[in-house]
Image (cartoon, rainbow, N blue to C red):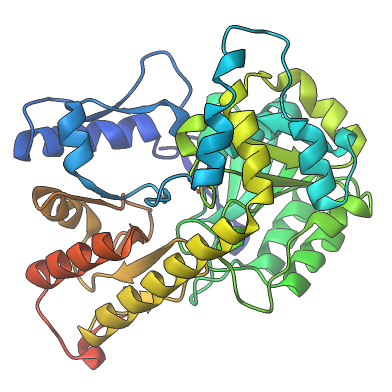
Length: 407
Ligand code: PLP
C-alpha cells in the first residue's frame, strides 16, 4: 500500500485495500468455520472490482441460510409493483430493440430534468467507474473523504490514477473545508471531487450548506460527483438532494441507484444526472448494458411511492431500535441516516468479530480502515435485527456506557 502523506493530514493513496484482497480474507475464515468451500466469497476472475462481481461460492442453501447484514442491501426484496413490472417484461428477453418503458424519460421527468441529463447505468457503481474513466485519464486525482465508498478509490488505482483522501473529522463528518482546500491546492492534477452523501460506511450526511460550499468552493469547472445511493433513508432536515445543482448547469454529477430503496441490487440499474455536456463526455465509457427487466422494474419503482415510503419507515424504525438497544447494552453507535450504521467495538478490532458473527449465521461488516474498531451493520428486516441483537449480546458483555471509549 503506497501511502503518501500530504500536508494537513491528507493521504495520497495509490493502492487501497482492494475488494479482491478483502473477499479473499473473508473466504478463508468463512470456509473454515461454517462451510466446506474454501472461497465463500470470491470475485469472478477477470472482472472489475465492484459489487456487481461479488459472488457467493457456497451452496445456494448456505447462502440462503445466512442473515445478510454486510452489503447494505434491502432485505425486504422488491415490492409487488416492481416484481409485476419485471415479470411483464420477460416477453422482450429475446430482443435487442424493445419497448423499455421509456425509462430514461421517466427518470428525467421524475427529477424535472431532460433525457439528455440522464445516463442509465448497470447500478450506480457503473456511474462511479464511468466518472473515473472519463475524468482521471492521464493519472489524475480524485479528492474525497476517508473512509468513504472505496470503489471510487480502487477504480482510480486500477486505472493508474490516484486518490487524495481527506480524513473524516473526529465526529465522523466529512472535512469539507479540508477537501475544498485539497482540490484547490492540487487543481492542476485533480480530475474530480467525490462526495458520498450520506457517506458509506459512516451513514453521516453532509448538510446542504456544506455541499453548496463544496460546489462553489472547488476550482471552476471541476466535476463534482455526489453519490446519493442512500438518500431515500435521510430524514435530517439539514440534508438536501443535489439535483438542483444539475438544473443550474453546474458541473455536478449525481449518482443514483435502484439497489437500495427498490431492492434491485442484483438487477444492476442506476443512473447519473448531470448537465448534457458532462453526460456526453461520459457516455462513450458506459457499457449501455442495462437489461430489460431492470428497466421495467425501475420505471415501476419510480411510481411506487407508497411501497418506498413503507420500506423506508420500516428501515428507519429498525435502525432506531437496533441502535438504541446497542447503546443500552453499553456500545456507542454513530447516528446514521442510511440503511446501515456503525457500532464501536471499543478495544476490539472488527475482523475477528465479523468471524464470530459468521459462526452464528450472520454476515456483517468488513474492515473500513482506519475505523478498525467499528463494525458496519446493515439494516435488515425486524426479525434479522432481533437475531443480530441476540448474537451481539452473546458476543459482547453488557457494559456501562461510560466505560466505552469512542473507538
Ligand atoms: N455508492 C455507494 C455509496 C454504495 O454504498 C454503493 C453500494 O453499496 C454503490 C454506490 C453502488 O451501488 P449499485 O452499483 O448497486 O447501484
